[in-house]
Structures are given as structure tokens and as C-alpha cells.
Amino acid sequence: MAGSGGQASPSPSSTVRVTINGGGTIVGKHQPASADYPKALDLFYGIPYGEAPRRFRPAVAVAPPGPGRTLRADEEGPTQPFPMAPRGAASERELRLTIVRPAGASPSPPSSTGTSQQAEGAEEETPRLPVIVYVHGGAFNFGHPLERDLAAFVAWAPRDVLVVGIEYRLGALGFLSAGHGEEAETRLGPGNLGLWDQRLALAWVGAWAAAFGGRVHDVTLMGVSAGAHSVGHHMLSPTPAPLPIRKAILESGSPTARSVLAAAHPRPLAQLASLRALARGRPLSRLPLAELLDAAVLVWAEDAASACWPFQPVVDGAGGFIPEAPARLWRRLLAPDEGEEGGGGKASPRRRPPAVITGFCSHEGTQFVPQHAATNADFLAFFRTLIPALSAADLAALEALYPDPASSPQLRNPPAWPPRRFGAQYRRLHEAYAHYAYIAPVLHTAHTLARAGARVHLYEYAAVASTGAAGDHVAAAAHGDHAPVVAHDMAHLAGRPGLEAVARAVNARWAAFAAHPEGELDPDSWPAFVSPFDDDGGEHRGSNVGRLLVFGRGNDEAAGGSDPGVPVQTRTLTRREMDQCRFWWDRMELSQGRGVRPVQ
Image 1: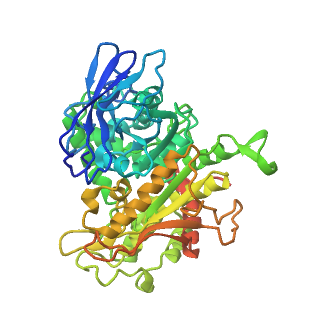
Image 2: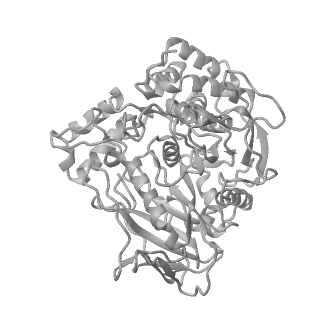
């Protein structure tokens, strides 16, 4: 399966047929086993789950082909439109998904709709498979489900799983809101359409994945970056999901990551105004697609350096997908249900929290902050712009937590970093941004769910890769560097035996988590996370508290080195990490909703 860089599939290949919806047929591709894909696979590309949507309107579900009809799904097609898409669609097309499974997976027993399957070479039924629904990343503005080699993930997984990769509307098409509801003159409808698209895809999975051999009552949501933020929003949304979310994998993301502002907050309103100005008075609903995408990428460019990205999920009020600030939704979701007692006399939460794998890369911020930041004033200006509600006291505390490298050697750039490219404040800035945007939110998810009694497994990905132009390389475990390792993508791992060992460790744990109905893992393989924080500002202590797995510590093969590092080891959260969490958690709501400090 092609990832973001494209990759040829092994040949020869043949087709596989699935009978669905009372006698319709979906034709996919059968891919034989090979050195890079050690299991034979069946792949079904571009299956529609939603009609080509009217711009700025909710999508409408599409059923699979009915009796006597056939859908060809044996070749990759175009993506949803987004700027500079490698295979971007020329029009606003149907919403689609891709299914990857081990060859010969068995369908559910025939139902009243006559659902069954016939696959080349499949002579007997095999057990139905747990389902993973993959939500791609890309800052809600870019990306597609084949950015990750889902075929490699399935082929290398020690436990058989079926993976569904979903696409959804992006950028201005999926995350534009007028801020005050319907606007007749521009036909801007509700916000968060991309999230509603994802939910429509989940409904399709619940209705039809059994025909492909999926166990639809055993679904794991998996996302990276914006996809992980999305998974978190599905977990928190009070609107019931079409499938029970019992297990989730959130890689470098959280529903409290970065900012989730109100639709009427000045920032998204200003970005909408910029988009309208570029449209020169023409209604956005009727602007040609190419012009809308060109305008949207210009709005993106205006705010890229400040990391105040446009076209993001918003708090959309009563009846919306995110009706309140995510921090408040966490409290509401896990608040005790009055009159209901759980084990040990504790009130049970309103909704059963899912089992979760979540974690972060060691250097999440390196790609997103100004590389030439040189002075303390540059450092403070970045955060004033990013979080306008920070007070003078907040900024003083920020400086104390992340001291100026002029007086604190631990935050100086390493000597190997070329000074012509990296300002003196770069390391300080990327570390602080990483904790604000990704690491502290990930740890907040882990803490909150663990305290609610959920099974949580926490990780850090530490194998470094090389970033930057020739001659200006910096070795870092940057945002997204773990993705081809999770997939066991041999295009990335070939010639890197240490990194391949890391991939085996990661891929096996992800698959085992998805394969168990409750997300249980061998505690010797991965101890459950026990939060070191209590709910009143205090701390818990003990040998089992605050533990997480570290994948790839010391490995530098992707940065041109030869150190294989340690594939997997256990460590404990440090005092500094705990202080950083407390700082950012206490100010989380400054980046949510109206962006003001909550009244105590």
C-alpha cells in the first residue's frame, strides 16, 4: 500500500470479491505474501461511505452496492481535496474508506441481508477479526488514510486484525464555521464537519464491516496527531457514537491538545475574514474548488509561524460535536453518576471510559516553532501570540519553568546544531511548545482515564531521525517520526536492524491491545499506567507509579548513525515532567472555548 511517499505493492496480484447488502459485490485486490509484507492480504480501496457532500453541509450515508451491482475497489484513488495533495481530487468527491485484512478472513454468518463473502482460495471459515479504525493526521488541513502503510501494519501484526482507514473533509471544507450559526448569504453551516464525517464512517463500519470478516462489536479507534485529537473528541462527545468506543490508541494527540476555541473566538473569526477577503466578496459556498484551496493555504501560511493554525475543531455549543471546552467535557464525562455505586463504594462515572494506549515522541515541538528565535523576547512573544490570555504572572512562571539558555545551560542548543540555522532560543522554545501542545495533553488523558479506573498504557518514542536540509541536520524524535515504525513499514526500516527491532516491539503491542476485547496486555510486557497525581493537587508515590514504556532509546539509525539503542524499556515520569504537567494543566482552558481563565 502506498504511504505518503508512495510504494509499489508486490506482484503478481489478483482480485477478491465480497458479497454484501443482499447480493451486491465489492471487488478488492489480493496481495500475495512477500518479504516486506509477510502475510497475504486483501485490500479494498475507496469504498464510499458518504455521498459527495454539498459544501459546508453534513454528509449523507451511502450504502454498499445492492443486488446485481458491483463496485471496483482494487486500485487506489484520489484523496479528499487539500492543498498540494499528492493525489488530490479535482472535485469534492464521495467520502471513502479503505479496508485491509489478512487474506481469507471470514464474514459474519449470513444475515437477513444475505451478507456473505467469496474470496479466491478461501475454502473454510476463519474466526472474525477485531477491527481497528484509523484516523489520519495532518493538522486537520492535510493528509489521507494511506499516509500510513496500513498493509504493512496488518501483515506484520502477530495477531490478526482488520484495519479500516477513513478519509474526512479537511481544512476549509471540513472545519470552517461562521461563528454564529447559519449564514444564509454564504451558506456556512455547522462547524466540525470533518468530525461528523468520521462519525458517519464509524456508522458504516458498524453496519458493514462484518461482511469483510470484522468483529464489529470489538472496534479500536486509532489516530495520530490530528487523528488522535479526533479520537479524543469522539471519546468526549456527549452525542452517542454509532459504535461503542471501548479501546482507543492516541498517538501524539489528545482532545485537549493545542487549542480548541469557540467558533465565535476572535482567532477563527479573523481567519474566516481573511478567507472571505481572498474570495473578493464571492460566496465561499460557490467559489471554485481550486480557488478555495488556494485561498485556504494562504490563510494557513499567515499563521503557520505562530502555530495558530486555521480550520480546526471548534467548541460548537449545545447540540454540537464539542458542546463545551474539552477540559469541562472530561469532568462531565467522568463525573460520578448520582445514586450509582461502583466498586469500593466509589460512584461510577457516567460513561465507561475506554482502555487506551497513548504516548508522545521525545521532541514533539521541533517542526513547529521559529528556528531563528534568538532572544528571551522572542520566546515570550511566541507564547503571547499563541495564548493571548497568559497573564504577566503566567509568563513569569513560564520563564522559571523553561529558563533562558543565557543563564541555564540545560536549555542551550547542542553544539552540533548549526547556529546559522538555529537561534539561541530554539531548544527552549521547541521543548516548551512540545509540552504545551502534545506531551502535557497526552499525559492529561493518561492521568484522567487512569484515575477513572480505565486501563491505560503510556509510551514515549525516543528513536531519533534526521531533520533539516543537507548540512543542517538535527537528530530528534520529532512529531510523527514513530508512524512508520508502528506500521512496520520496511521502506523506512530496511537496513536499520535496531529500528526494525523497535518496530516489532511496537507493532506487536498495538495489535495485541486491539485483539483483546478489553485491551488487556501482559503486565510484564507493558505495565498499566498509574498516575502520580491525585485529584487535589497532591501526589502518589510507589514503585509502580508513573511508569511508561520507552521505545527506541539511543537508536540513531534513521539519523544516519549505527547505534541500535534499546528496543523497549521502562522508566518513570520525572519530577520536571510532573512540574511541566501541572503548569500546562492549570492553564489548559486558556486555549479552549472563549480562551479565558475560568472563574473559580
